[in-house]
Structure formats: structure tokens, C-alpha cells
Amino acid sequence: MIHRCLIAAVLLLSTPSYAWAGDPFAQAEALRREHRYEAAEQALGAVLRRSPDHREANLQMGALKQYLGDSKAALPYYQRAASTRPTDLEAQASLVHAFLAAGRLDEAERLAEKTIADWEDRNPDKAQMAKVLVGIAAVKGLRIKREGIWAALKHGLAVRSILEKAYAYDPEGVMPLYALARYHLEAPAVVGGDAKRGLEMLRRVIRRAPEDHAARAYLLQYLTDQGAISEARTELAAYRKAFEAVPGAMEAVRTLMAKLQ
Image (cartoon, rainbow, N blue to C red; front, side, top):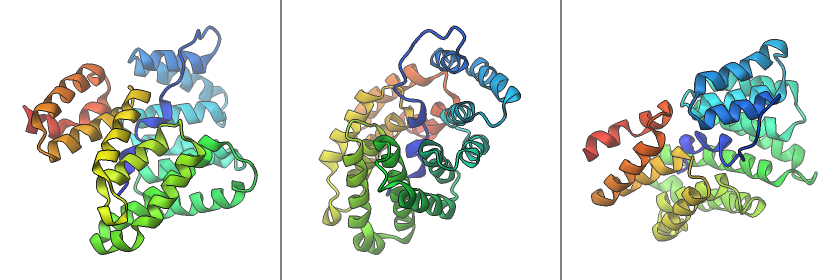
């Protein structure tokens, strides 16, 4: 129910712009916002050449690679951040989603379960715990999707419960709201799916995080599948204007563009 692409763009979203003099991470973020991806990678790479285990540099490099649509290249950076900071909740949460994006569901599930067990009773950072919960719900949802309608009827409510818990942890965040939106749009009504509610949630995600090309690509797909072709074409024009310089974003809608031409 929750496709692994749900995390493709959320890791670098809604970061405030600020001056970057002397700060390579702020520099990399500013360069990314200007679509100067090679320069952003060079800024982070300079830090990693000096300090290969640098937590923030590895997390940001992984997020940059993922934002550009290269989940395979992102994974080693998240693995290094997590392995060198085994008690760091953000590093572990990011690795859960990196495994998920790479299709390594068993590893994502094991790490998510361990992280929840380690942190749930320790007053964790709410946004990071929500990220872990979304990760384990995504694993379960993907397995349900593969198994078909009977699995959805049997296990769908459990997935929704996990997502609602994630949303309760981080009601102002992008990721749990996006995951819940997709649940409502994809799940049968008998297990709580509600297309109207899901579409409203999805549009809230886009308003909160206009740089989230994953959410906007999903909206395009949903509108096309529902036969709302005129609205989909309008959304596609706006999408292309916003993300034409983001390779991963344009690849995500390549098939849709052919359908909507």
C-alpha cells in the first residue's frame, strides 16, 4: 500500500535557507536549492575526504543522492552514518528508509523493529520515531500489496494503526501525512481507505513541502488513474516547471508524460 518511493524526496525538504559562509552543510543545501547538484556533492565530498565517518556529511550526501533518484548510491552513506552512530536515532531512521528504497525489505524491517524497541520508551525525537514507524508500515504495506486483496483485508487495519501512531508522533511533519494519504487512496474502504480524505491529505503534503517531487508525482499518477486528464495535464505543466532540473523527478514521471501529451 505504501510504495517505497514515498521517501524519495522527503529527506531534504523544508530546510530553511540561510547564509553558508564557512558552513559546508549550509553551502550544500543552498547549492541544492539552486539545482547545482554537482557543486553540492563536491562541498559534501570535501568533508568526507577529510572525515569519512562524518555523520552529518554522510546523511546529507545520502539525502542528496536519494533526492536525485539514485537510491543505490545513497545507501552506503546512510550505512556509514548508522554504523558509526549506532545510538543515533536519526541515522538509524534514515537507514531504514534507505533499505526500503533499495527494496531490501527484510533489512528495513529488522532495523525498524530494533530501533523501535531501543527508543520507544526513551522519550525519542518525535519526528525521527515517526519516520521509523512509517518505514515499518511501508514494509508491511508492500508485502500486502504483493499478496493481494485478501492480505489487505486481513492486515490493512494494522498498517493504518502504525501510520496513525506515526502521525500522532509528528502531526506537522511531511512523511507521516504522506504515508497516511497514500493509505487512504490505496486501501479498500473496508479497512479504512477514504479517497476523498486521502486526496485532501496529499494536497496538504504538497502545500507543506512544495519541493517534494515524490508527492507531486504521486498526485499526477493518481489523477491520471482516475481519468482526471485535464487536471493531470495542468499539474504536469506545473511539475515540469518546478522540477525540470531534477533528474530523478523527471524520470519519475517519464511514462506519465507520454500518456498526457
